[in-house]
Image 1 (cartoon, rainbow, N blue to C red):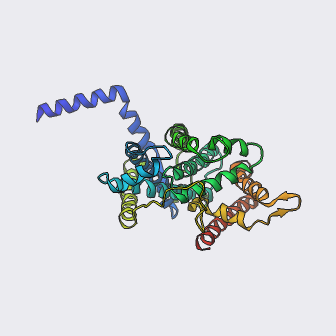
Image 2 (cartoon, rainbow, N blue to C red):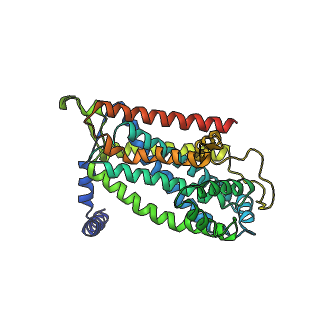
Image 3 (tube, rainbow, N blue to C red):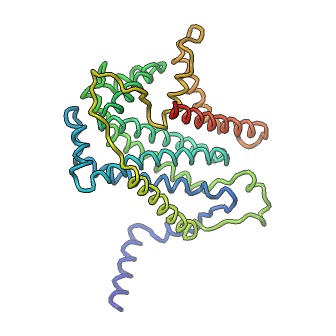
Length: 361
């Protein structure tokens, strides 16, 4: 027993000398989390992180058997689904996990938006969060083509055609992603490299910066809580109180993922035929569905401007408004604050309504 204690002390001393564990523990204990009726939204970041971890692990396992070639991509997915032990399970974890991660990141974005977490001094926390959402959607778009089935092929084709109409850089980016005039081997090769190398590198740096900003500025407080007298404000320590609650929420989130995987394993459609007709009623994934449906509602021409181009510009302006919001709403004007809240509500309702409409139509 004494020998075990000494070995344990030596191990702790070894780790302390090299990683300054006591300093990290002090920082974690110093951090505090506000307790109020909206505190549940503080768990969204942790849930997104655990789903991201699932993506990393399952993505590495899928790379062992996936072949990024037109003649072999679809067959390799079929092999993973039907011949590799637990292959269907790993692929379903990856596919369902991607959708859940994007959904949670969207919820995290809007929850921080309505709690006014974009205000000083958290402007860069907010902007890095916006970029993380863009990266997550880029992961979804590039990964969608890789199974090389008919739906993913034609959905990607439509997405690239729409992107090509974006002013200034849209055409250049679309051509760069395609690797030519049509979707080909160059396209799937580039999507694969972007999906497994370029985007993860960008994500690593951006996520590190985002977490650093969160650590520096702490948890944001909604106005209703911030304006309370100090005596009525309640906090809890991040470590161990909130951290252990976070772990319980992660377990619940993983259970939701496992239930979806078991009840609805992710399938795959027929192999893509670039020269065949597009499937009837083809639609993008749900996180692009609101934009897709909105463009369908825009008239062919609006004055001298092509309708689709006008719709893309309008959506770009709507997205840009989220980026410049920290400059407009700094908490000094109640009217601007209410206007920002109303804008967020309108965008959220419009996105949900268009997505549901697009899914049912």
